[in-house]
Length: 166
Image (cartoon, rainbow, N blue to C red; front, side, top):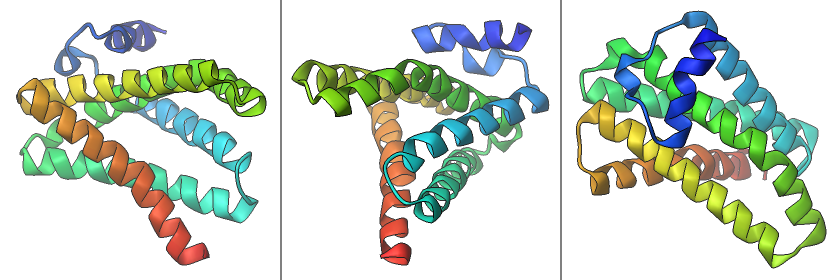
C-alpha cells in the first residue's frame, strides 16, 4: 500500500517519477493488472485467440517502447521505476475507464464518447509528463513522445495483429 500511495500523485499530475521507490514486486503487480485489464477489454471486442495475441503484443510493445527510449537516453537503470509509473497511471485510468467504456459503447450516447475522449487525453498527458521528467525535454517534445507511445503500442499491436491474424 505504501508504493500505491507513493505513485498515486502521478495520476493527478503531481510528484516526480525519478524520486519514487523502486519495487520489483510492485512492478510485477502493475504489469499483471495491466495485462488483465487490457485482456478483459480486448476479449470483449474480439475473438479469444486474437485477444490473447493482441494483449501480448501491447504488453511487449509497452515494455519495448519504454526500454528503447530509456536505452537511447542512457537511463535504462531506472526501467522498472519508470515502467511501473506508466503502468500504474494507465491502471488507475483503466479502473475509471472500464465502466464508462462499456456504458458508452452500449448506449452510444455522445456524452459517453466525450468522457472516453477525456480519459484518453488524461492518459496522454500523464505519459507525456512522465517522459518529460525522465528525458528532461520540453512539453511539446514530451507530448510527441507520448503520442508516439500510444500509436506504437496500441496502433502497432492492432496493425501486427491484423497482419498476422487477418
